[in-house]
Image 1 (cartoon, rainbow, N blue to C red):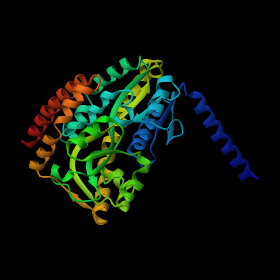
Image 2 (image 1 turned 90 degrees about the vertical axis):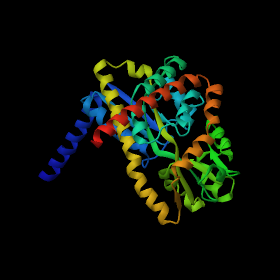
Image 3 (image 1 turned 90 degrees about the horizontal axis):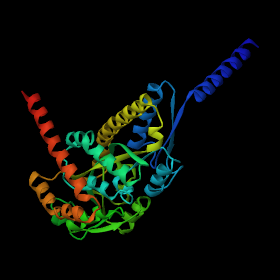
Image 4 (image 1 turned 180 degrees about the vertical axis):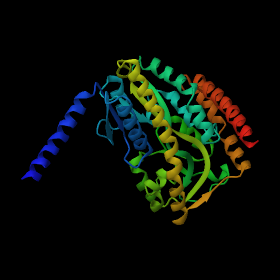
Amino acid sequence: MLKKTLKTLTVAAMLAGTALAASAADYTIRATANSNENDEDYDGLVVFKNYVEAASNGAIEVELFIGTQLCGNGAECLQGVADGTIDVYVSTSGGASGIFPYVQVLDLPYLMADDRIAETVLSGDFTRKMRDMALEDSGGTIRLMTIGNTGGWRNFANTKRRVAEPSDMEGLKIRTVVADLPQELVKALGAAPTPIPWPELFTSFQTGVVEGSKNGITDIMGMKFPDAGLKYVTLDGHAYMGALWWMNNARFLEMPEDMRRVVVDGFYALQQATFASPKRKSIEAYEQFVAEGGDLYVPTPEQKVAFKEGAAPVFDWFKSNVGRGEEIFDALATAVAEAEAEVGDARAADLN
């Protein structure tokens, strides 16, 4: 009887504590990612939730909705952010390009050389510039909080042959998103862009509707694309897979400054988590790809130059055809140059 009574009291105390914690939150942030719990976006959100709830001493509660519980695609989700039914949403550049076409600047090939350069660029004023542009173009409703990573670097992969030179791309049917820039890149390298929805890609490889894609290795292995015939990966690293984290601007600004600082720091913690997560996950993914018979090719420096030269027409296309394209291109080019100088100086200092 005593044990039963103690157990009842313990459960009641736990429930009361939960109720108190729930009522203590002054603000609730509803955050969604159209992915799954194996994705870098989820890793970032877990870190964000833990940091914000702890640093705010329970004043902010973060609710996570993983998958398509709140919305199904970039346009729908960003509309939800704009009207306030969703507080936080993460998109790829392709997912946001229908509303903010200039975010495709992140898909311009061969601009950022490595993780260190990319992370320096995305942690600085370039992201603030894009934030200002998005706020202006959304009528002050959608705020870009940070840019992290989702999947490492985009590389060319295919079912047919090793791609060592741009000429090896000739005629390959490469899956792209609907956005214009990835299609222009594929065409510039001599291949045929074929827009295919992500859920249909596995079957499309099997049936030959497409013969290649532009993906990171964790996505390739997570979706089991080698089982559909994807056997060749070329580590050209043509684009850093940026993840854009959006927030309803009114929701952010309604908080007092100390709580806004917590949220900003939470997004910094999230960004760092998504920078790190693909590095760890890609190790096992590459090992698994090779173990299953995959062909992993690293282009020589001369071959990388050839890829960059082949893709050069895309830069002019972007600046001429994308709204505010030249403005954001100049901002990125400046940020990359500054990052290269900063990282170069740091490397030199550490070598002595």
